[in-house]
Image (cartoon, rainbow, N blue to C red; front, top):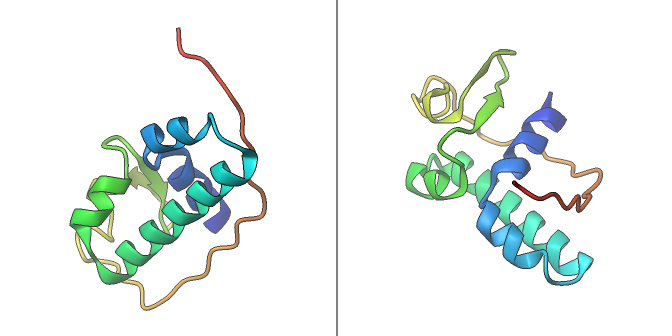
Length: 102
């Protein structure tokens, strides 16, 4: 479940910043993704919703620990029904898949 949440988070974190990094090396792209992932995790742990809103897309959905798929902005973390004292993320793989939008 954490892998799905991590994937969804990374898929929607600051697309503009990731797009800008796409013109750099694979190492630069991975560093950007890891930095954004860490910033998002720290913001969630601190319940810093101003920072979270800057990192999450407006229409981002998450699979929360209650096994419910919800809009991130209305999920249990945002409503303080769920708080984290800690959690561990393990990024197993980062793949740069280039796509184009018509």
